[in-house]
Length: 324
Image (cartoon, rainbow, N blue to C red; front, side):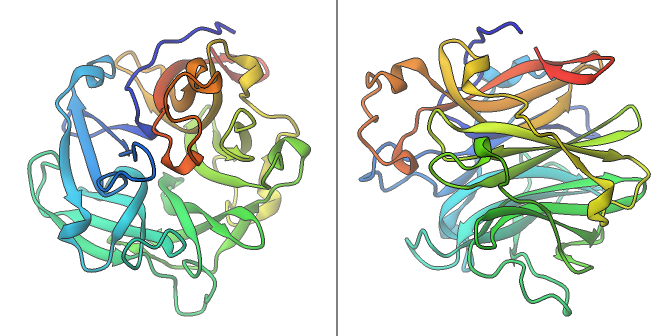
């Protein structure tokens, strides 16, 4: 593994990159708090676009949504993802359901009113909801929702407090992708030691479909140097709502030990570059944060802005893939 990598986009955690049918690459991420007294952080959804992935680094960043635009989504807006679903643009994100309450976090949705997500207005679709027969999802504490299509079916996956932070899966109707259409399934929970360092956590699901398989990466443990990325996979044509269709790797895909000059890799996304190669976009903290030189190391990790987006290539071999 090539260990050294440069920061892609500074102070942007939970990075998500996608390519639209319009030919643009779009980038969004959590907008940070710069210390606990910052009144502006975690209060908006930002968006960049460029014709290449590398172009996103210096692209203009716009605010497309702010908590003050909403009656349902308040500050502590985390991990937004922008998805093009059936010709419409949506952003899935976590936000508080009450003002300045970090414990009232659940999944929310906004929908673009036009075809241009960078310039057109957005409509608040409110808190994500579950089908009538399912009373667990989006109650209590849920976040980190992603969307994907596989074998002509549409899914959302998210993290939720189910004793620990676990990852769940359900289907959605692409015409109304703000509500599940089946009972949720527990996809993965913390089982191995590397998933339970300081806090038992599975969160931040991210999906890539390649070579007849669907791969779902997730983040594990607390958000310090112990933060890492695990992996599950299934056959692309399998019944994904059957837990037995999925295989979970016993060892993590990426940890701090795999890196140099950075630590705590987590909350990734996958996207194909202009050459059709898969790119792994993730966040980590710089070594200066670990050594107490960043100015925020004394803060609770929630208020530490030093998680920055980085990217690496996905490399394939006879055993599957690894991160280059």
